[in-house]
Length: 87
Image 1 (tube, one colour):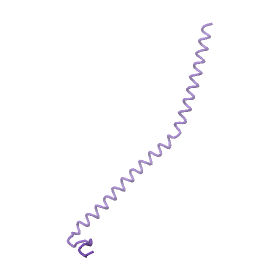
Image 2 (cartoon, rainbow, N blue to C red):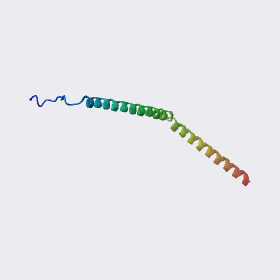
Image 3 (cartoon, rainbow, N blue to C red):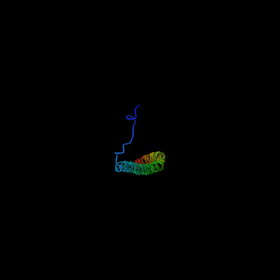
Image 4 (cartoon, rainbow, N blue to C red):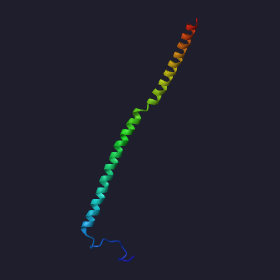
């Protein structure tokens, strides 16, 4: 390769453009880091809520069984009351 084909930084590039590119890069990194921290904190909150609610399914099943038992008991009571009223 000839020297003309190699990549090089021309002295005609103003230092202000280089500084602007560096500042822009740092700005993107700062904004990206802040966004990631916000997402991480929200994800942590959601994970805690999911962990707290894990046992609710089991408790719901127990409540359904208790309600079924109560319903069966009420049905038996109604039947007995009905039998007593017929006599």
